Image (cartoon, rainbow, N blue to C red; front, top):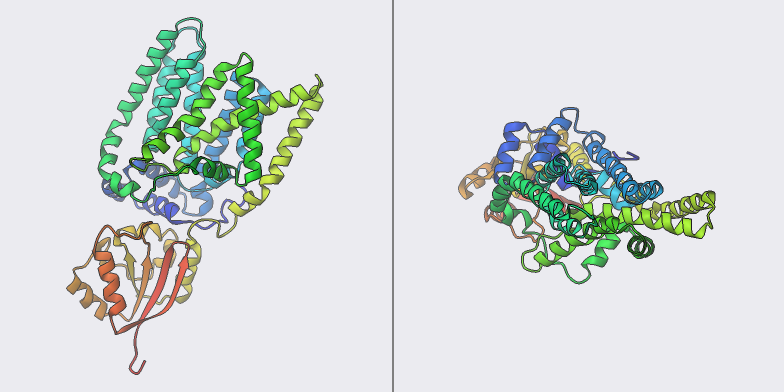
Length: 465
C-alpha cells in the first residue's frame, strides 16, 4: 500500500476502471465483443468502483491479493519444509519488485497469483492424505476453475500440477491420487470451457500484438522479476541452485515436485506455443514467481542453518541479514515502481492537460473509436468535451457525415491510442485521421505524447492565419 496512489493509471488500468464503473449492461456488451477473458475481473471492479475510482481504491484488491499470496507461500513452505522456510519465502515474495508492480495495479494478475497459491495449497493438502479426500480435490478443482475465469492462461498450471501429481512420493494409494487429480483437472476445464469458447472467437483481437519470444526470453523474464542483473544472479544461486539441490538431497522431494514444475512448466509451454502462435507475455505467468519464492525460502533456511553451527540465533540473524541486503538491493526498483510516471502511459498528465486547455463543448476524436476506455480513466477531464460530435460513441461516421460534422467544429482534441503494431483493424480510423489532417480549415497547434497515447489539439484557422 506504500505510495499505491502515486503512479498514474495507464491504458490497461484505464480499461479496468472505465469498464468496471460503466454498469452491468455496459460490461456485458463490452465483453461480448472483446476482453471476455477479463470479464470476471470487470465484475469485481464494478463492485470496487462503487466505492470510488481513485487509484487507492481500485488498486487495493491487488495489494490485498499480493499479501494473501505471501501468506499462502508461507503456509506451503511450512507444510513442505519448515516454518522458517515458509516465513522467508513469503518475505522474499514481498521484496521482489515485480510483486509491487502488480500489487499496485488495477488488473487481475496479483489475484491470479494469489489463486495459484491457493490451488497449490489445496493440491498439497490433497496429496498429503493417505487416501484421496473429496473435499481437497473439490476445493482444488473449484479454485482452478475460478483461476481460469480470472485469466485463461492460468490453466498452464494444470500441466505443471500433472507433473507434481506424477512425481509425488506417496507409499499408498498413488494411482487413486493420480486419478483423483485427473478428475479434478477435468472438472476445472469443464468449468472454464464456456469462457474458452467465447474467448477463442476474440483471440485474434486479444493477442494480435504479441510477438514470438526469442532465446533471451528466459533471461528477460528473470530481469523483469528481480529488477536488476545482480539481484537476478543472487536469486538464481540461492533459490534455484541451493533450494532445488537441497530439496532433492534431503527427504523433501515432494516440495521439489510442487515448486520446480510450477516454476518451469508454464513458461516452457507458453514459450513453445508462442513459436507457432504467440501467447506469451511475462505477466501472464506471473504466478510462477510464487514457486521461486518458496524455493528461495527453503534455500535461505537451509543455508543459514548449515552455516550457523547449530546456533539458532545466528541462523536467524544470518537470514535477516540476507533479507535486509535484498531489500536494499531492490530499493531503487521499488522506488522507481512508485514514481508518478512509472507506468507505460501517463493518463493523469493527459487529463491535467485537458482540464487546463480544453473549452466546454470542444469535440474529441478517439482513434480507434472503440478504444475510448483506454484513455478515459480520469473521466472528469473529459466531462465537458463533446464525445459524440465526430463519432457515434464507439462507431465511426461515414466519410461524408464525418466531413459535415467536422465543418461545424472549431476545436478538436485528437486522442490517438495506436495499436502496438500501428496496424488499425478498421480502415475508418486512418481515414478519419487523414481527413482531419488534410482539412485546410484546421491546424494542429499542440501535440504531446503521454506514454504511448498522443494528444493533439486542432483549431480552426482564422482569416489570414
